[in-house]
Length: 226
Ligand code: APR
Image (cartoon, protein in one colour):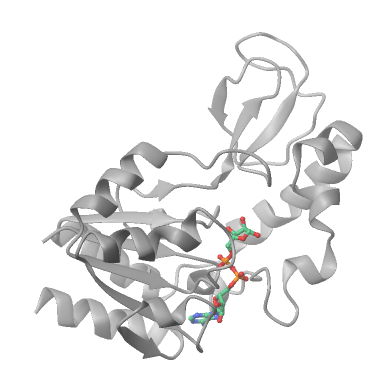
């Protein structure tokens, strides 16, 4: 039974990490075009690094919650493709293996000149030389608006093979992730949404589990693992 799980910012909300579109979300405090596009990085790399350095520090200070732990348990005990739109490493720190970060990861850097990637857990600066080509062009390994999400071939194959698709803590407003439920459903998967309240894409799911992820996800995983 191929299970595909897609998580969003709501998974980490109870760990204290801001979501994007809830009341006090990140996009209420920062214009996307100033901090989350390739043009923004070309225009003001220091501002972009300040934004992601702050998020990296917050993520490093946060702890996985019961929902991360439950998904880690599921990923180690069932045939699961665990996809996340989140860039924190709370699922890995909860013990999940093989997490598919489709929007990149805060604790990785890439070179804007040659594309080389490397682990980077501390603050970053554009002046940091690339370990491969030496160019001072360090950027966060984050998929910005207008860039292609990562691991899409693997994700598409998992959706085609899925018998169960779950979307957890995501508003379903950003594609291609928002379209995954239609692909999975079209390939015959049962689709369940776990969220605090109904979302734009809710009508596409046949089951809704309403409540905070730290409560709903452990119960759902227990149900799956029997
Ligand atoms: N438990 C469950 N769901 C929650 C919780 C919670 N404790 N708190 C918030 N949510 C839900 C909200 O109801 C909302 O549906 O999490 C969702 C958060 O939505 P967004 O802030 O839009 O985050 P997300 O869906 O992950 O955004 C997708 O947009 O800006 C880009 O790259 C960014 O990966 C992000 C993408």
